[in-house]
Image 1: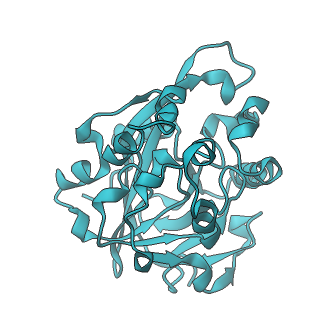
Image 2: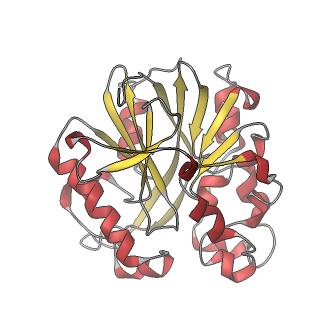
Length: 288
């Protein structure tokens, strides 16, 4: 049964960077905006603990110490404290790196891989295109694509699992305009869908939460839920950050259509502060 497994989950804030808010909302006045990097913790009754992305962390700071990677820090000033690293936050709740069986990586930008270094025993589930896009990429070529080689260079190939190896299944009308996806655990519990454009091989996931219905972690296909509500596209200056502009807008439109269809699906962009505030207020806590 599609999404017949109820998964507990929680949302964590691992720090934020600051940028001009007009990058995301061209209609607004010039001013700074915080882009928080959120990590989702999921608990599957059979698969155990897993996280979606790993946010900011020590890996980000270590990966941006030297030139030209230090330019990443200058371009996106980051506010992060050690206690915000996802492994540290989980440990305070009794969940440790060796407990995390799977890491689902939406893509490999530095603000998603900063905490990856801690999880040496976890299977990393991702898209083959995402891995291929960062192979042998370093220096300025890596920086302009938001990639920090330091964060992944010690990971053995055997630690990776690719969603293309899982069966592709048809989705029902609840997920329109997404018509198919990858059955990540072969039980219909977590469905990965393609969201290319922002980064090559970017994926998002649908899953069923016991208390809150279907959750859609849509990664960086949009940076804010407000963008979906207002149907406001980012500033064209952001185009140089994208892997493929046409694919980005196609992914954005598909996510926006999910919002418009209003089928009870909660959409969570990785960098949306408003969504995190709702979780921080205690409305959605499930895992602990």
